Length: 343
Image (cartoon, rainbow, N blue to C red; front, side, top):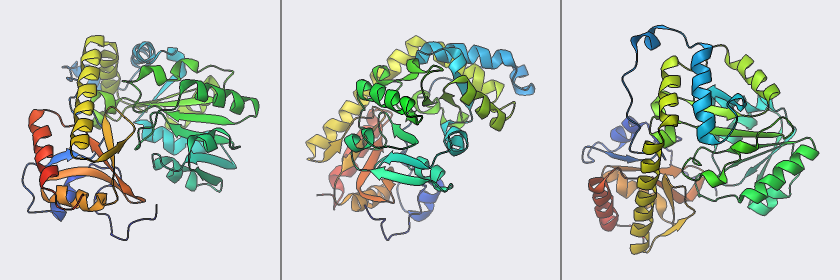
């Protein structure tokens, strides 16, 4: 898709609600922000010991969080390096994995193209999964499930892709930011020293704590050593590590959160179907709408104080995060019903 000629004043990745409030000053308050695919029901942050605010993180903090994360993700704790959000790892990928040719899906998370564009490599944007599976590139990057269209890559296909890339000396990078509620898709358990596989995981999306800025890169030890050298000795805080340790260990909360998210996602998809609107894929924490007039719908919703995610380079999609409760869902339903131009 060609970029829209309208200058986008909302944030590149959603959020930044103050920009929207300035652009639409007459919108009703409070705003309903559905622009990010983040769990609207956050993990309850525990009361933390004062010493965690006062001390630099130590090896014991990293180890305890890694063991809890490994049990949650299904991988060895030694395969995990924590970062200040998965974005920090994405920005470093071109340095960690030098490449002459990088392949990406045509529709995917935009920061991968941005990161590799800062190098002199050739970036291939491929139109469908089959083309990506059969391409020859030094690094192949994809999201599973894909963001924003929710496409789920079959596990067997990715296993085959990793094997092929390993044989030819290439790498596969799989962004699993939205896989926590779809664990059967994850390749985290396939990380070892013989496979050229990197997996990125997000903490903030599933646990609804994006402001904590915590993510993880999973990969072979040599790669993790290079990453840690670039991040320095304290890439994340002891506070973040302790919250993550507790959250990763809380299976009861995780099961309840997964059930809530699936129910909310199904309700949102049902609402779109009721209104005759086309959706694609299933990201569990978001639903993406396909419509040739989505830019008009985006503006109509904004005038009603509802902020959803649009894309500068794709004028056919809008992504909706999950409403937190029945009140928010009803407000969205009402706004969609009165929107003038989405038909």
